[in-house]
Length: 553
Image (cartoon, helix red, strand yellow):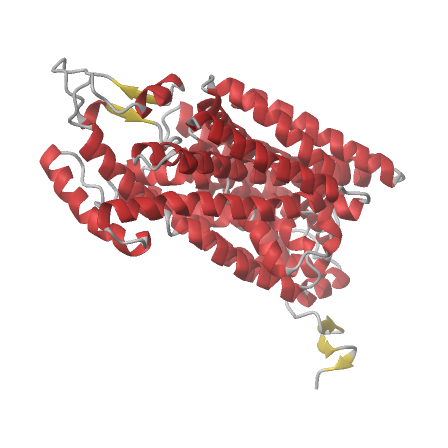
């Protein structure tokens, strides 16, 4: 059976599984649509968080980014993983205890401000929309390669699939779909890297064996006279590394589509356990990405570079057709040099099974896994956009008397429209997948992270303060992204992907300053904030801690 048919059958089978799960778990009430009726067990919620999190950027783009950037690409792994620790310990359990449906709803009620809720809803739409462009662009890469069509056509096919199953199942359907997608994507990600490890080192554990390949890469780099793979801060400054690290950590802790996953469990304790399971499930992929990067770079340097331009592996032709690979004999000597290989970091993982000649089944499995990664995150993002539009804006601000049926209808149409618009933008994406996703994290770190951190841990923060903070943070972050991307601005070598550090700092300063110069929140709100810090059996009232309605003496 041909590679095309195997890949197509695997993807059709997994799509059938996802759609079947969505139909079986169709949302029939608003609590199903927004928070899966708060009934998801922590281990399965951890899987769903992992799938929601391990987007096209993680699955498709991250290993390629590390392969191209070397040491400097590790900021993505460290930032994204560290952000989950911030989220799990400082924000998610407390938000679950507050018991709302969305992040904007928490901000509106905690700060007693409809304006703050509206700004938060708009910020949710901006962040999730930016993030979804990267996911749809990733699905275009996968479908384009599979069907051997232009990436733009593949993107449009992805739009139709995501719009259908996200609108149908809501959060309830997406949760169980994401559990299945996690299993598909992690199996698809691990099998090729394990086989490559066996091929190159005779060791089936890539997490232990790729150090051997790193040593050989150092020697190859010296022979070719290129920048050494493991030397730090060669592609960016030290300050850019730190800024990107902070942006990804704070952005993770402020992403609305990730935070809402913690609302789908019953208790604070379950929310914490969800975070712990998610770290385990995410770690399986993140610990494998550096091995992918090293193995792929080694194979390209030893088996592709140095070959006759007329005798290149067959896989190169198909990827050249997608526009993501360029092999040009610039020197005219008939030999492909390492410097003449221009490979997009968005295709490294997808091309790896072909590069390593792992067979048609593994290639097809990789395609199915990549689609699972793109679809799972895109589905979560569309729910976040839908909740902001239908719940926080339509229901809470425009039509508070809307029936449940009308709210579900508005929510479903919000998903369809948002998916189509994001897909149209993704036809000509403004950057690589990991870069676009980094912008979304920068926006989250400049808007939601300060608002949530101070909202939970500083009872003096008030409505005017959070409004000033979110507007200032968003403005500074967006301005820096555009100025760095299109105007060449660079402070301490920090480029557009590190913009969140400036946005977060500005937002925190604005929030604290305005809060201190305006009226303090009511005593009731301050007591509620103090109460968030204690487990559910403990409550804070009248300036004291009580256990199950008895004073803690």
